[in-house]
Image 1 (spheres, rainbow, N blue to C red):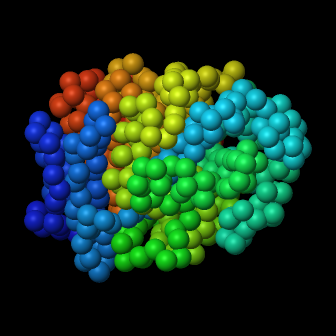
Image 2: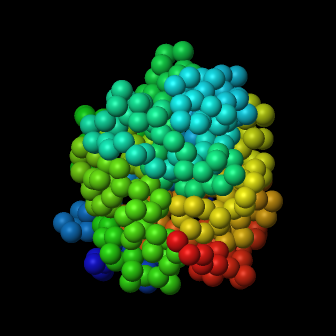
Length: 425
């Protein structure tokens, strides 16, 4: 059940630049009125850090405070961080978004996947949300078993016609693809560390290193799967029904290996050490915001080109049969490893050129190129929304609507609770 803890006001800390006080007010309000346990929110604007807030408990059970250097598992917020590695390869001329994946990775062509493009894969259109071959935790970090399972998987629909959230599988496909393109054959954990984290001085990891100080890692206070049934006003009923059916695409997309089907298992050292790029990135929220702030302002430190950043900014190419997500069971929009704004999830400025990813429980990070903003929020008490957690959206609303004078961040009134009309699972 939901853990409730009173967090003293003195435990909410950090700094904001002049003019950004509304964000600090919203952050404090999260602890006072929205049952926050521990969290951080950082914003870069125009290449400069303007908001750096943290507070509460990194471990609510043992009352250990969230410190300035605390790291936190961010679930699918990891996806957007991982996608920067693909952007680096694109900028170097090593990756073409419209090339077939099998051109780089010949084995991928098996089981009817020969014509799947990189763009389709990164937009969750390849039909590969589920991996049928049973996996163990030890298989997840660059094993032959994992590579074979990915290559032999048959799509659940004709690629390009539909889409469905590749909640765990996307990162493994990205990692194997990177290893086939990179001259050093590095998978995503090593490639990201060398080519993204080191140049920017980031403290963020895909596969927490063995020598990492585990006392700095926040404890996730997660919900049990059955608790979703108690929060149908927050989480779309269509998604909850599908998740509860073990034979559904939705359930199968999140349960292989089985250890990943329980939220609090992401506290386990062996899970955090595994390379699960779509779901188990661990790091400082400050680093995520710095990365998005870099990309939002052109990515020069990473060597990104105008062609690469333009590709990230443009509107998503929808699947031919529409935007209904076969896994999340609501309408969504994806492009090049990122979520793009749509009526039920409006983030960033009004042009919809923003891009980012949300994570289970409420975390969210994104780049808004029009305002040169990188935003990141993560917490350790998991909420029950697919996006627009009240804690996160309060911070984003304060930043964009009140400080930057951009559009409101709340969903379009025509949508219900941030989701599309229910369709049967």
